Image (cartoon, rainbow, N blue to C red):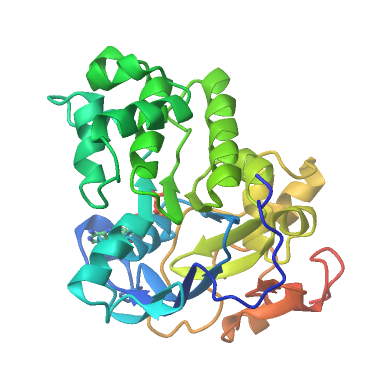
Length: 338
Ligand SMILES: Nc1ncnc2c1ncn2[C@@H]1O[C@H](COP(=O)(O)OP(=O)(O)OP(=O)(O)O)[C@@H](O)[C@H]1O
């Protein structure tokens, strides 16, 4: 999905996050194994430009969903700032907050659980539309929205269980658009769908983005989709951004071993047995202990050396690119010395 506008203006980004942080109270076995409480979102900075698509990737537990929920105000941040169109969301009046709630919409992974099974698709869309009522007849607007999402008007009278997964996801997209949002946050928008349908839904999203100048933030594990649709990618590990930049640059020349390991695990990097040992990220998420201040990947990284035990800033690795690895800051991972 290329951006619909290539703007060279200095207009405020649609969304900006500054030093956003959220820690949950420890729970369960995993928490007991942790040496120290690690924030689910740990000082994240992010800018989303109008009309762009950014993908948020990382293993389960890296904090992607928490970040999405903080943006949608489904969680309250412990600290940091969220700016929407240059305005602090925390300080908005009730009326302006209602406007913000309409401007930022969500498309869920599983449309079956996000639609009320007792209501028709049309009445669910009308319910959302109450946040920003249309100028004309709401029923006519529902039909128009469904048609725009590639569904006939008769879908308004059907219930979620009477339609296919792909059709319901289209209805979910129509529902998100019903309040003319500026930013749409999507959590694995196609992963619950058959392969054959996934492409069609991605095409629909691309068309709607062009037609409405929408900004997309896509949370996903599917790096192939990221390569197809997102011009920017943000890689998270244990609550931190470890790498970010233009997708094709990051995928062609990853500057953090974690990014390279993810690409390798998804068969998006050259594979052979010799390379395996230098590239593969070992084991599963491991939380740092209280005395560990360096790279959070250190126990799993095939390239780790003593220097990695020092704090690693998110360093420039090129125009509009950053990585949290001293090695990547020096150059491509295969050439930087230890
Ligand atoms: N409501 C909550 N209460 C306590 N801990 C939570 C809560 N939500 C998330 N966490 C913890 O925060 C960390 C980040 O989780 P999060 O769901 O944001 O990761 P994720 O990258 O989105 O994973 P997934 O891809 O599986 O959705 C995890 O350690 C998780 O256990």
